[in-house]
Length: 168
Image 1 (tube, rainbow, N blue to C red):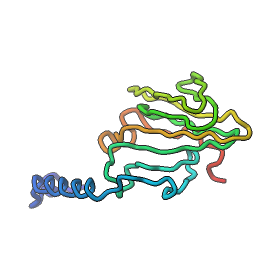
Image 2 (cartoon, rainbow, N blue to C red):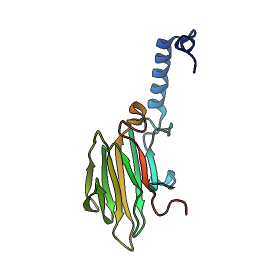
Image 3 (cartoon, helix red, strand yellow):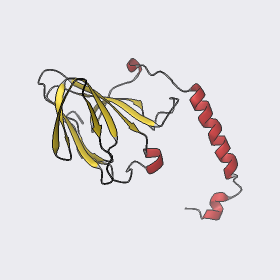
Image 4 (tube, rainbow, N blue to C red):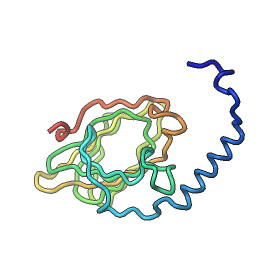
């Protein structure tokens, strides 16, 4: 790794800040303001089946201050189990099931909302679909703290268990 003097080597950091401002302004001006559900592919990842509307890795949207995704739990299935900082809002759109949060069970059904607390030590969470015939569907929103605090966000970010559909 170069030493500090080499890192500065002829750079004008104030001008770089102004240049970054201009890039952000362009993004706000030209980024997507409306994201159509049919334009977003489903992905199967360790947490489950998800569609990402807002994500730190998506550069075509006008804001990057939020993470926002839709998740589907197939009939009788469950999400992966993770440990992370917390600080999410979840709206259950379809189905019925339960969520374990730090070992405590919370039952939910469509149109219920859950606030996942933000904890210094983080939370452990997993969602379960109780129907054997119908999917469960929910959306999740949280502040994009990954750019500020890193993906660990001060408490760690660990996949503790994969969803059943991952790797099939």
